[in-house]
Length: 88
Image (cartoon, rainbow, N blue to C red):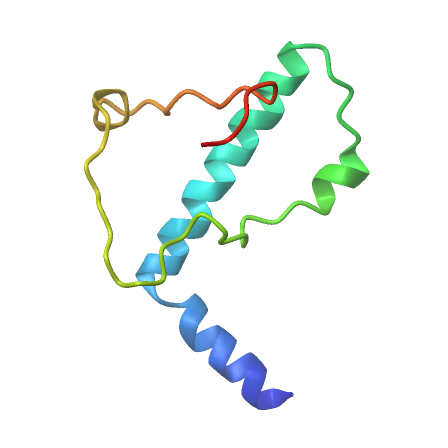
């Protein structure tokens, strides 16, 4: 068990992962705020269980594209996807 925590701490200290978790946290907060604006009831107990550590959308092939939309380069966020539209 100690080996697991040592390895996790080593990986967690990498700048990529810190940026990745920060990026996910920012978008999670934006999504929660949008839901509140739309009138959803957000239970704080549910929010406490959210984690920015999901990685389904992360490419583990070692090939990344960092072509950012103009809105992001100006310091904004990409528009959130509608929950009523299907994923691509």
